[in-house]
Amino acid sequence: MKLQINYPWHLVERGQGFFVPCLDAEPVIQAGLHKALGYRYFDARAKIGVKNGVIGVLFYRLPLKI
Image (cartoon, rainbow, N blue to C red; front, top):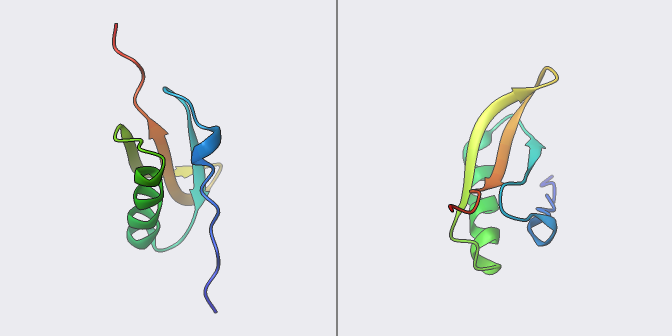
């Protein structure tokens, strides 16, 4: 069974992000960054980490440089 992950890129502004809990991070990172390209977010990044004891991936956009 394959789970469908909804990546809320349409809600993310510069300097913001969201966390996706997962066990196998590499396919989640690839799929998430691929979805970001659909919104033309070339500044999207991903980091593997732990949040509240749950392993997952933090997706975020770089803040605007001034």
